Image 1: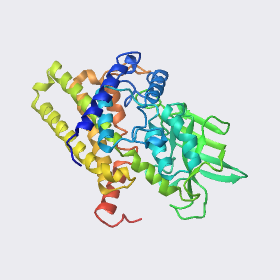
Image 2: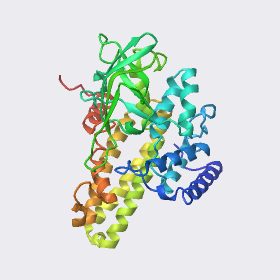
Image 3: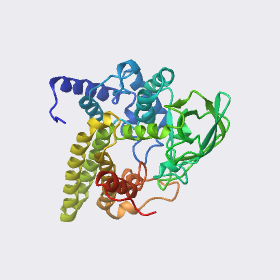
Image 4: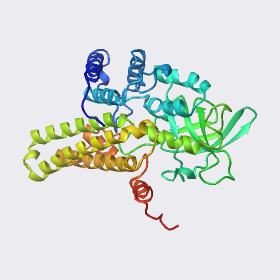
Length: 392
């Protein structure tokens, strides 16, 4: 990828920066910098209003084609927008699952009717989505899903359990991987269903995390229903659709994520300067290594954007997830070390944690969700390097 910005790109950067700066200095100043890792519970209603303000101004779904409510931005302009959003300390997006995962999946795999029904509500911020993938026995081994769906007339009836479902307690809809043919091979017989969350037959149980908050949930489907037409792609061919969704998850938005990492690193460096830890040569070396690591991450992410824009998984994609997850976990450890003894002190539950304490605790999960480090190493070995599979 050409890392030089054109005059048109720079003009777009100015437009995005100006709008974000003005908006986050006004009525939404209170949500600035909130809702990030370990802070997802914060100011939900205010951040929902922010989501709708973004939609009204045309700043949601910037990567989507214009005919579906997006801006149709080039890859470079998508990168610019997410960078400017991070620089402006825009709050954690409550509509990110719909915009970044479900929306592109429907655009790529969905029917015309599904595009007309679901995309406008995502773009406007009026419907929120969650992802029903992982199960107690199907985490990194996603093809092991056991949640089942059976047709009953013109509706699917769903039974099963999902776990680690982010934002389920706030969501209107969930895209759910279900087994619709239990006699088919492991990666077959799976369908990708769109399921309304606000109905009888769905129970949501929040999972309290070590941060004291509950971003994740268990979701139990006990006879929940959705229309027969709410299957994305072909029945029993949901694995292909699910892999497409995972590819979209690792798209241009990751560049904004890395700017948030840079914001965190800058704050860590400032604390080290104030409390004298910067005088420690080991701390200085670790800060330098973190800075270098961020640059490597950025360049590799830029290299991977082109195939990801076509929903293609590449060896570099697998390396990227392993790299950033390990990096961010180490950054959380560095933050706590820079704080010194104060970093280990918190009040009794419910905990009143500092920003960096929340960050440290949350980043322990980075190497697990979205594909654990162990599974990512297997993918790199088997698919990228051509090594034999592990013996069963």
